[in-house]
Structures are given as C-alpha cells and as structure tokens.
Image (cartoon, rainbow, N blue to C red):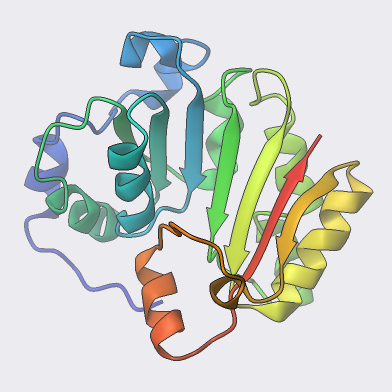
Length: 208
C-alpha cells in the first residue's frame, strides 16, 4: 500500500472529537466512553474508514471502534465524518498492542483486507496468526466472533487453518461474496476497488 502524506494530518488528528488519544487508559472501561452498555465491534486496520463509518451510521445501537496505525490514512477517515456519530470512535495504534487497549469488552472483531504478509518469516504479523488469535482471547466480553474479508486466497486458506487450530468454528463462509446474493454489504474502500476489477472476495465468520 502506497501511503500519501497528508500535510495537515497532525491538526486533523488533534481536533478530532471521536479520536481517543489515551486509548490504553480506557482499557476495561470502553463502555464509559460511549456512555452505554451496547455491544462493541472493533475493526482492526480500518483504512480510510468506509466500512466502520458505514456500519456506525446503519447500526446506531452498536458501538464501533476503528483502529488504524498510519496518521495520514486515519486523517482521511476523519475527513469523511461529516456529522455527529455518537457510536463511533477511532484509535491510532499498532494492532500488536491491541491487548493493551481492550480487556474483556469486545463483542466482535472485523478484519477487512488485512496485509497478507506472504513471506514465511512474516507469519507472526498476519492478523489471523496464532500470535494475534491469542491476543484476541482476552478482548472478548463473552463469546468470541471474528468476521474476515480478503481478496487474497492464500491468506484466506491460512486463516481458516489458523481459526480451526485455535478452536474456532466456522459460522458462515463464502468463496465469492459479491456473487452470493447477499444484500446490504457494507464495503471498505479496498473492497470497492477490488469489486470493480472483478476480484473474488472471500468471506468468513468464525465463533468460539
């Protein structure tokens, strides 16, 4: 992914009311941030925010948190928020630190078009590796649920094996999401590009 620098990104981030600047201090008390007990869904690697913003607007009774580590990408997502969305928050952080920010309070995790890290020596960086699945263990408030979309067949196959090896059960799966007669698919910006190119989108929901 080529990152284009946003010149005024610092001021955009500093002035954003829904960007949580002290995320580690909120560990275990994210419901107080939203001032309700609604479910919390987290997207790890939200990119420019199309998916998480779209969900927050469509489902006002669910709290959504989008995580992104790149300032310029996060700034672009912030610029898309044109109205008050009380059930939406952004966090700037590296996914590797996710267990330092949440503790038994998440109901669902979204992994949309994550970096496949195809080289074997980078396996630990994949968001569906054993390293990350172990980190996710203590994030969920009760039942564990992960939704994943990718256009990368190798990552998809790897993820299925990783889920099964970590005792997740497949709840839903599609080998061609956009030709599966499903309705109301909220797409990320990458997904929109891939669909225009007629790329196959793989989708899976696992629970534990």
